[in-house]
Length: 414
Image (cartoon, rainbow, N blue to C red; front, side, top):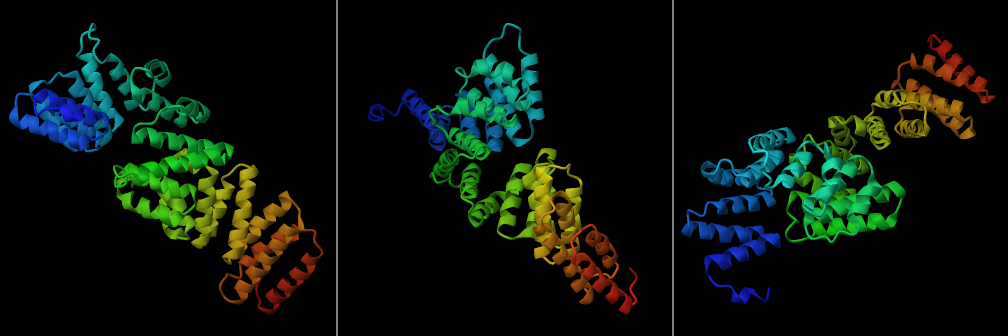
């Protein structure tokens, strides 16, 4: 900063100042300098690439493409410009489009062409969803700053959280992306090993980014504050931020998973169910967190049969036992006594404790009360009797006698 006062209003000094702005992530200030110079020097075509790069860094990918097109009209085979074009395509459309652009650039280059070879190899790994990451990225960690970050992301996707943490724990953070990624790694590791320290670090990093003047109104900034409040379990605040960016993530499974959990946590089970059912990822849909929340939503939305079907699709495990307990208790609480009785019946057979018998007994009596009130079909009584007979408790015969007497008096077949 001490050299600023020595800068003069000449092109060389102003270009140096713009570079400093860029390196400090002050992209708008850099753009203003480049545009001012371009107005005076139309033949400085390369400045369009610098402007396009600044817009890319600001997430204005369409604007970046438009500015870049001016340069590519004159220099259509520029490696730097075509690489930036591929990066914009990756952000705007998909990795496939970006990969095609980059491969076309590589195919049209001579075998002796070495310029930006490492950068192109790095970006091709990113565009291909991490394919070849372990062969390419480790050697580039000290060459391309993003290589370390993308290797961290690769390890996270492979659920190798300790490897991710080892790569980023000592990194000196300088950009919002680095703060965010370190926050994500600490959040995942903290949840995985039950570490409050890691979760607290994640909260601090998310709050730093989301509360900063430069990021507070950006999509990543709002995601950070949503994550901060999610870790604090303040779900009304989570929804405040997620709702503000929801339109950008309609088909994003991770967003919908977090959004649905937050909706369910504040008791908005109808919208939570809708969000859960938007998710396509088989990995998320097999996660117990997903299954348990969706089951709860079904029960709270008076769709207990669908919750029961979720349980039936699971293999016998500690998680399926926990889901049974959730269905049994939630169904009982919501007056959906038939499926409560079925769940308590299975629980009792798996673990014959008085608690589960009492739950089943209460649920069976609840079914009878609903029948008396005209809120349940009499046919359900036929399904309840076998559940009662599966128990050796002496109270069973007394309850069955009462049910049979009522059925006889009301000409109902058992």
